[in-house]
Length: 89
Image (tube, rainbow, N blue to C red; front, side, top):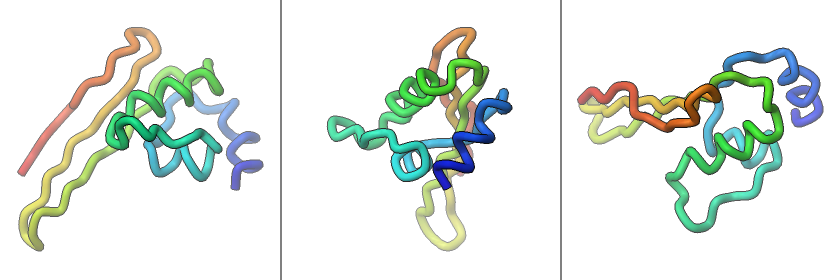
C-alpha cells in the first residue's frame, strides 16, 4: 500500500488523512508525547508532500448507540493552522 500511495500522492492537492493513516500507510513514526495531536502528523505529511495544499480528517467519538460527536480538523498550507471545523452532538 505504501508503494501505491507514494505513486499517487504527488498528484493530490487535498488529502484526507490522520494519525491512523500516517503511521502504517506513510511510515511516519508515532507521536508518543500526545497521541491525539493530529497537527504532528499533518506537519510530517506536509514535509513529505510539500505540494499538498490541505490535509484534513474527521474525528468521530461514539458515546452511545444513539449519540455521537463528529468534528473535523484541517491543516491548510497557506496558513499552517489547525482548527476544529464543526462539532455536533
